[in-house]
Length: 225
Image 1: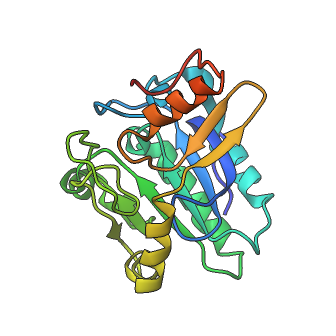
Image 2: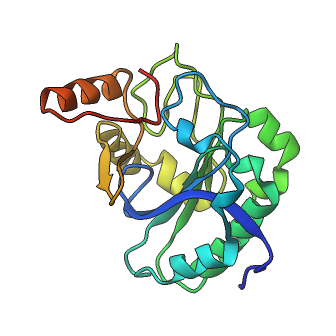
């Protein structure tokens, strides 16, 4: 299924493989722009709805199609707040569903949102039918948790399809997700070091302190400590 080349999406970054935000080896996408802006968010760099971050949805889909199809287990979309761009998100999800129909292995689509589950059901019921699972609710800094795929105890994982129920409620799968919760994936590019995952409370401060002890000074971070 081809996407509409006229539709653009604000994209902070995309990466493959991601191994800490859902089962298996995944495509990770972080959208740019967030109106929720939770206190304690570690991704403040994704808050501004920067028009310079706009890319064509079809170009994102072309990149996904270029990945090894026999190695991708799922796609995780985060941000930013993905549902702040409903038209672009819907176009992206439709394109991803069309792509996965051409792939022999099952590929699940997972989305994080700071909106409440009730709001998502009321405002975006059709969008939810395009996903296999969603993690809703705003991050609450005062309610830390070590639960899989959640930054705070008020959040939960909602399975939306048979594949979602298999991947996100099965015992073996939950054990895999629990082991992920203790890990942070580290990636390096020419300008920065960035972290993928959901850190436990205090992890980023500890990481800064350890970096300082090693003589590494961070000029700018996406979180406040």
